[in-house]
Length: 421
Image (cartoon, rainbow, N blue to C red; front, side, top):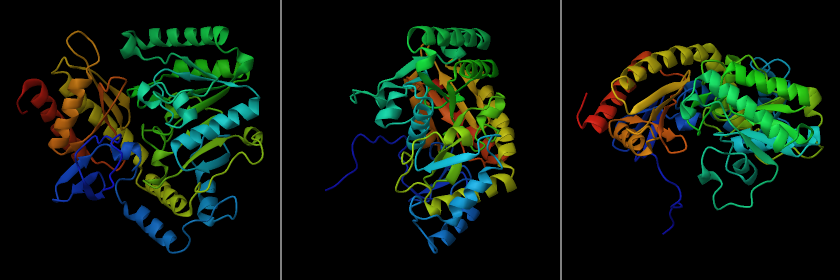
């Protein structure tokens, strides 16, 4: 009897049969509030009617048209439409399937354009599971353990994580920039450094936002030394943080932007954007892929962009995110075990620590499982699994936020107090 690999661990026991908006349903018809969104993928919710209609129509016309063989209209339309939302100057696009592929495309471009071998990444970042992207990932050892030798030319510098260090944002930022200068002096000299690769908000690393001073410092050093600044917006893009791109919170534009996840509302699609003068430096034949820019995925992405704009989902993410953050902080104020509630928009983490101040993945996991039992689906992240993250679809409404916050409060109380709220 064939079975799935035992290495695949399920975060919840739910066997889903269908979904609508932020709701999932199991075989018994039980409803669950899905505040995972497929790890930030179903940006317009499960089966948004406009996305479904666009995909169905495209399936009846053309499913696969390999885009280094022939062109298709959904790809051309999506490319044009992305000009409405991309940061100014990032006017050339390359499409792939997954976040890992897009990060590797950015890596390839950076190395080929600069002729330099090294990449500086920042502690806590997650960039993928392939050999190259696992080499760039420092959110947990599970992504690279048993996988050596990894790719050479990667150096790690601190991310300004004030909660981890127990410092103010200013202290953490000063430290991170000072250590970056030390990295450039001792590990990867500037003329051998192709790029800085960074998430505007750490994802798997614990939902830790960066800050304006830090990113300005990266931009200044990149400009000074001819280093490319690459923002991995795989999880933070497409309205997730209450801005279309998380970088907008920090008034810094990268040289290369990486996007995936929410772009297609569940259809696999990813890409990188860069200025024309930079993109033309990629070596001929080095960009491509069998399934990249699939016609159905592109049609879904166009519909996703329509829904985000027509339903003002970026504004909704900011408003519902503020509502949810306030509710989560109200719960956290009752328990010493919840050390921090942080995030931007609808990307919010609750960090658990034990009585000695150490990361407490056991309690975070217990609360996450309790929430699932009560009908609220959540995920953990952070190096020790100590953060429970809320990442619902951007279509979530105020009543659903209130319901989720109430279920969370009940779950926290049940685990920490052994009762109900």
